[in-house]
Length: 264
Image 1 (tube, rainbow, N blue to C red):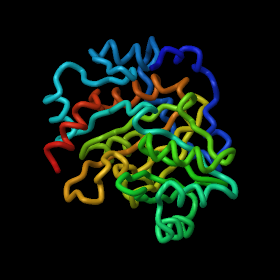
Image 2 (image 1 turned 90 degrees about the horizontal axis):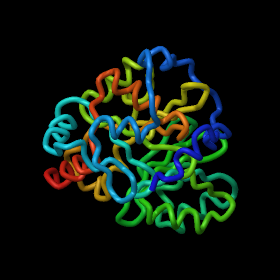
Image 3 (image 1 turned 180 degrees about the horizontal axis):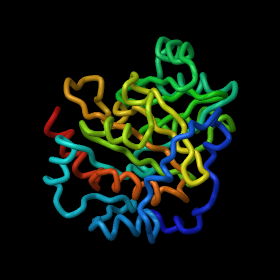
Image 4 (image 1 turned 60 degrees about the vertical axis):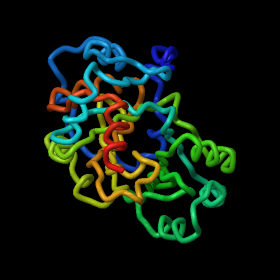
């Protein structure tokens, strides 16, 4: 539920403490001349129908939203319920990955990567996206995987659900839309690649992250281009507005689920 969203506005996302450097992308210049309301309010104005977790299920026409995902670019609020944002650091991070189901080979491959890189990591039948940052890992994981990571990492894990929002640009035009925003070095690199930029004085992580969208990702032959935007809850509405002003169309989680059903 987002009942406490207003209380969280202005609270600093803990990404601030793990960002090594912020690129000078001027997304602020893309803001509409005026904007009122928080993320949920903007989604309501766009016609959102919300699910029990407070996420937009659809905007009135699932088939039309599915067409957007297939032909252009939609912006989907992924929330922090089914997919969670976990920060891992410290000596318990690697054992936690293995205890949650990651293979030794996958962990070794992950440890060979540098900052601003990442990889899709299988945790049993689930898949998470793990991003390598200076001093730690940022994990976008299905809720069951996230629970295991938090339980096994103890104080080495931080659940960012109360502080950050996860917005996804989804569809074939997502890379060009991100490029128009001035954010490069993401969608033209392998899955897991990411960059950090400043927006309204807060850090935003933009990542090439389609893999965590579906549990059986590794079994698919068809995927959707996806850029995940991890942002402070306090500026999520402003970021959503900036991306829609560039041409991203609001799409609900139902359209993603329908895409998955038709592309098994």
